[in-house]
Amino acid sequence: QVQLVESGGGLVQAGGSLTLSCAASARIFSIDVMGWYRQAPGKQRELVAAITRGDTTNYADSVKGRFTISRDNAKSTVILKMNSLEPEDTAVYYCKAVHRGLPYWGQGTQVTVSS
Image (cartoon, rainbow, N blue to C red; front, side, top):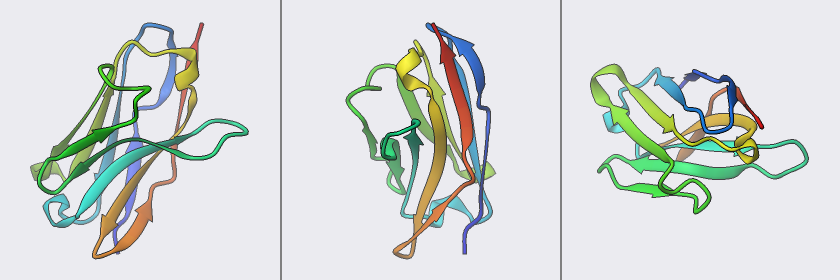
């Protein structure tokens, strides 16, 4: 079983930056895929960015060029750097890990971007 704890959310003005961190209880080099999802009020949860064990990354079109996902294996942490934030990025951001075929979710962290 993998436990995930997110941190780094908050309130920021449009054009600003935030960095989200996801600390995993397991060594992330053994986790197949880790990613960030978000869910805005009234909308479905959507993929924001993901990174595989082989460091292949995938981004939603809406965040390409603005967000960067990376992993620190020594700290068992996945980081999402978010630049040029827009009000449309406002959502609860969730960390997800897929380990041995099973999905694990964090509790979520709120990101609010004011215009």
